[in-house]
Image 1 (cartoon, one colour):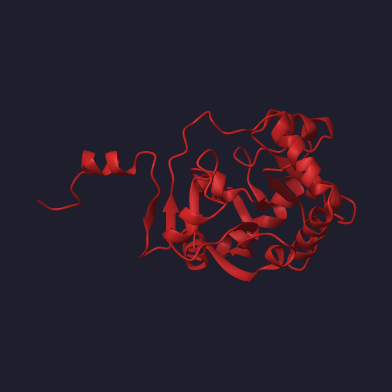
Image 2 (image 1 turned 30 degrees about the vertical axis):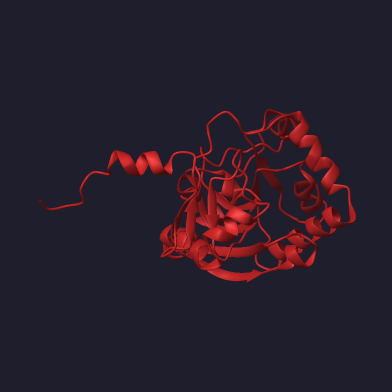
Length: 234
């Protein structure tokens, strides 16, 4: 029979509540149970405390500097933590940084400041995903809404065994796991080229974190200026 046969039930049984790792791709997936994610007031407050440290302040400045080295336009920070990156970039950048978050406390923080934008409902020129992409089951749907730039910090692994031994293997939050090549491959599949990458967050004291700038290929870039003008406070 031609074509790919249906996936056997035994595969689903093996993959349930287990890490699936594709060594040929450098990509792993863990099926986080819906509804157990700890996105609440305590989660927001923890990020506030982390941002108000020497490492936290250094990270925010490094992220602002990294973005400005590539792009100076309007940006949507997806998964804002405590909003520290937004505050830092808005204090120095000429274009506004907005935000989006599934945590109700973070969303309220954004709406109180007129900075909430839902990138799933409108096309945006650029997004930042600081410690966020690994949380999003269907990240391709988000990337499809971005016209030009994506800035990412994310845990980077050598292989599947590294994932299992890592502090970043979080069964209540992290869905996706990547090697550096695996992440670049995932973005390539979504129409983005890697422009630069570094270990600046690891240099600041974090463990196994890579930082990347990706830019969309082709005609999608031509729409970025129109999208920048279209960013509006809600």
